[in-house]
Length: 229
Image 1 (cartoon, rainbow, N blue to C red):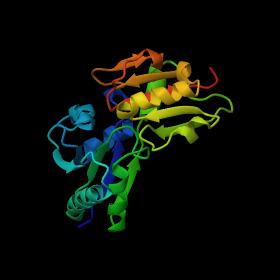
Image 2: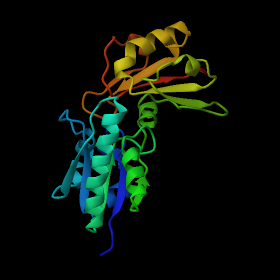
Image 3: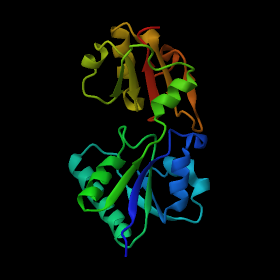
């Protein structure tokens, strides 16, 4: 029996219309759809593709929202074992992941483990959240010779990033929104910053001026800083 193939499918930032044609094809052809389960019951990625996977076998993959590397590694090992069992049985699996699987995606840690076990695994790109956010703000991310620096807002020290001559994208800024706002103000960049929370999802909020928002923001918040404008 031929072994199945694992596909890490980027489903975009939230708007179901931003699914790529390739993602749709793979979702429809897959025998199993693997769904990241963070234990919060939200199922954001599944919500994006639900109309395209009705009747499919769903494989829930527990991915706890913790920073403990030992716990995370154990969780990725368990997910890889479950996926490999499906592949060994000849089933193809589409593992859905928000945005693009190559940009701060939990999926890639599972991807490596499945490859190391001798199975075939393929990355399927999706629309990254920061591209959707820039479009929602009706702006470009970079022009001419401008550089772009993408930073996780939870980065332990943003000082070195703020000093780089580049436009900036701060991803998943919710928990650090207050600290980020203060840092941007210290560097004279607050008036050049904009933010979108839950881009393309229910409850979307758009702040063309980051300075106008309050001190609370959800996990799916992206801040864009344009130095040249």
